[in-house]
Length: 516
Image (cartoon, rainbow, N blue to C red; front, side, top):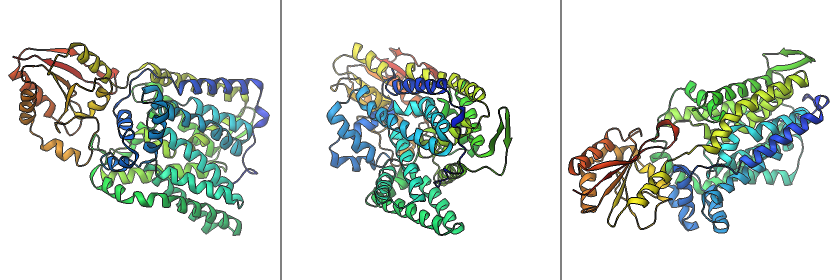
């Protein structure tokens, strides 16, 4: 967390013009609209969120022991759905609203560090950065985390400079909400407390008092996590990320850059991420020396240095924890520290020496972002709705739907009638939720012959509809073996829905095995 250095932050107000204000206003309007627009059905994680949040409030905590997340978002979604329903649009709107709340906070953060120009730059980046838009259209907790971290930063910034009981209480409440929303916030907390300790050690009386105020608010707010500790330790020992293993730190950096820009599918997304991180670097190393001249100070200039340090340390702590627990980093986890990078990138953009240079860079960023933003609107995240449509249109009495792996089940079930008999493999139960506890061990110990016989007995005299994707980790060879067993028993089969390959994030193939 950074201190109140408004007197040392570069003021860039003089470079503003009506075109700058109107341009950012247009981006904000676009960003607001796009936070509520996507044509994709809910994919696995979103469907799981809805299924867990649909449980009675008192059962959500126990269900999350199988899932690997803290409970706040699910409690909020439970209440939200009780008012607005469970349609795709309704459940995603909670994240859309959270994404909207981040925008004024982004403006204020940028204004504090680089004047009105900085406020406009941070606001514009937050409005149209594809990561921010994507997770405002997803029924998950990441937009909520982004907004809570922005709020915590602003409150901490105030408390470092002065005593304020209301802000102290507010920071404690926001901290409690954040740690109960996603575990990567704990990594951010470690980084923030480390920086506060360094500030206390090196600072004078005023700096020490400010550091204690912020650290005490963070500590009290974190007490909200204590009742959740038994579930957390249970998850820590048996869930993790069995769907992927920890990679090298360089891979995490590439994932982060592509995710910021809209996903690994688009070269433009990675370029946006590269440009974004260049602006972050500019925020801590660049000073304008004239209308067309920049000076680079590799010792780093004041302004957003501490924000970048906290973000980098939080990412590093998370990656080390991932290596120890064989847990992968994916770009959505950046919600815990991305606000700090957005602030730094916006300040870097505001430091471009001439307004025309800043506008040129901004136009280039918008052009790169347009690819990821457009993809988020039009591209499907799952084929579950397609599978369900084909099954509903062709299924007869007694037909059985088998889904391998079961991770394709929640999205498919959302579009299937409740009376369709659906079996998730290898657990052989209805795959409305996924039990991630010891997931890899259970999958690798499963016998495909048992699944084949179970399906044949269950669908005696009726068709077996088989949803399959052979590229899921911990299922190596299992789904193919089940398919081969069904094919041997029922040679008459046909592909009802072909796999669309890399076009869909969560794809697969639907095969119908007719009774012999």
